[in-house]
Image 1 (cartoon, rainbow, N blue to C red):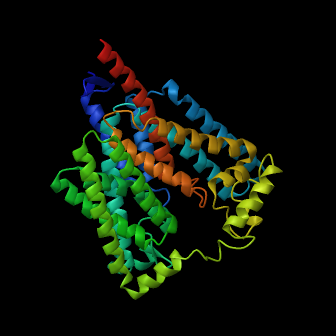
Image 2 (image 1 turned 180 degrees about the vertical axis):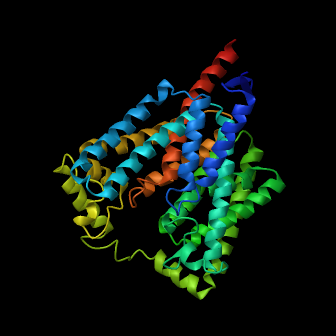
Image 3 (image 1 turned 45 degrees about the horizontal axis):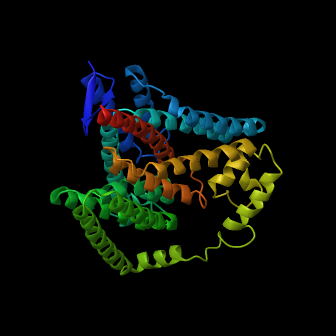
Length: 417
């Protein structure tokens, strides 16, 4: 049996029996939901992704020709890392880092293959899973910050900052941005009951991001939300839709400011907010501060074709690179240093080119592209190399773009027939 989903009069085939198709979609949901629980190793995300990968390949999964450049760039990127790490293989943490990098590359191709077929349904399941996982992480973070869980302070917070089910508050904040965008989309465009539920979800996620006290996550949520809402206005089909998005966005902004005002009335929260909001952080300033290291590291990279190997930057400087593009050069030499930005910015360019293509999954596309673009920008000031959700979004971008090309071709043929 072959299941066919019809969208706008165009058949988008999903080559699987109904039972198999339901199993595949359920696994996509599970992967999305498990992505929020990563404070243990191996994490539930790794287990769920491995289970999904085996199941999808056993039940039918195709690598399309359009995805071959993605696979090639990922292979070259990791070859560069591996060559540079050869003199360091006696260090177990380096071997683990290399293995993780190859694993992340595999997940990118997997997500691209998965989202290139049965695209609308699988993206919807991924969205649902991510929102559920984000709510678990957010509620855990909020409960930990306000000491609502006995003995949970050490587990759910770090240095007075909420981290929930993550090891690092910065990664918690970054992960929550995409689910928050999904919730915001529903809040500004869906019917009243569903919109109200998502207003609450967006508020809880925003609160968790605020309590993580990550400046990058704060800025990322504001900028990606504004960018996504602008794209939604530009791609809306009617003036009524545009008006509602604008009005609801204003309401959300007012409620957000009110939430911040309430939190700042708490002395401990206000003090931490003041400390984290300052641009005079000691680790950012000076010759060996964050940005000073970027300049010195770039100068080193020009003279080191094979780099210095993974996890070695702190041996030359007080801290790590905090710049994923520089880290690619330092960890994998010129080969990885060229392939990493080529991979990322090729995806960005293609992403902009597909914004206005009318596909059934356009709303999900706008949210994922906005969150992905925000992480691309964040990668200039923090190490995102092994962020699971970043590679998931990268793979999903390629899968959606591949599916859009097929859909557009089918639509043109259907209209001309």
